[in-house]
Length: 306
Image 1 (tube, rainbow, N blue to C red):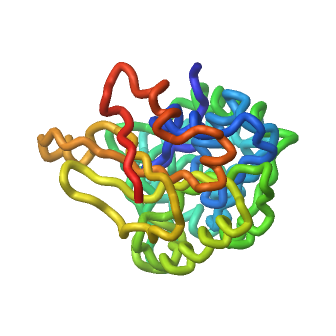
Image 2: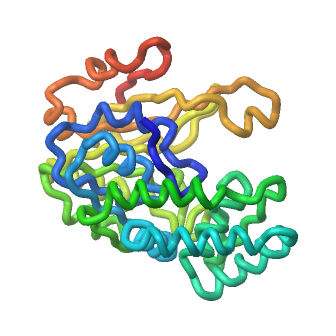
């Protein structure tokens, strides 16, 4: 199945979504993404009928404004993107700077979509003022408008009429989760603070996030967390507290882009954590679930315990 993805985003879980979805129960009421970003997991879940309703949230208000347009006015945002894409012809570099300035001044959703489609490696960067400051990839013009429109309309059809959208602090969103829901979290990279990394519109504080996870456990809320990983022998992120009793799975994500640039063969593994409530809800240990999806490669998934 071809899964649509109108919003290009570095770090999106679209390429490993097929390895995360098997840990989703079959009786999800609402799938909640407090750190939605490109909403790759929700899109995949909707495509495979894993949930009946969705809640997309991100503290990045312009991003959520773009999601609102994609879901509720696909024709309008597709037309706006096509116009911007066509107007750049012949002055691509200068036009990108013009649209970047326009976005930072107005926060227009169509300008953001154009910037995401044309910036280097779909890698969002913000300055200390919260302004988009990533440079363009001068080798390409961005995604063709017809392919962009196809994905916009496909995602709109998946989400329209059954998706809530918000731009709130993640802790507020977690408060509405119920036992028959599932929370999927792909928060900013571990250790990132409010102004500590240009890749993120706003970071989260580690101890506060650990407390939020503990509260989810106390309420017996099912959740899946993508939070750290390793490349070769180098690990990223702090170890999560053992008292959270999370099952940790390593998913093989392929060669990292940095390793490729340096001519190395280092493979990246991304960690996914499964809550105790979800393990009980699935009625099977994660090791049993992985048996059906590791073939043909025995290293596609590696299971470890925190």
